Length: 170
Image (tube, rainbow, N blue to C red):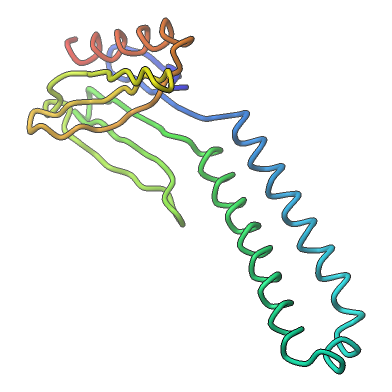
């Protein structure tokens, strides 16, 4: 959930870091890495005997399972990094910019916009899954997604939106 980290007349910093999601992604990564180690430890002692008996079929099965387990470990690392980094939104009146940062696949992605390019803050409500989306709507019509809030967090969402609106007007 997007939270206010710093609020002053010249600076507003918002961060959205998912602590529980990071923990579960880290556990998934740990379990996947353990499965990878277990697979490697079990396969090494029987390489010669199984290859002599089953030939290339056995090699293909080992390669497929090794690739799948390795992909799970890599996926877990990427998801853990994504949730751990989160989204950072910096409004800076002194520099007259808005900076949005999030993690890409390999490195953080940083986008800067002029603070004067913001038209307004908008929300969308998806009743099917009970989630609100918060967007910065730019004067050129572009919609920048900031965060999502569950319906139970509606009060926190309104607080964040009011803080953004106050900062933009101020």
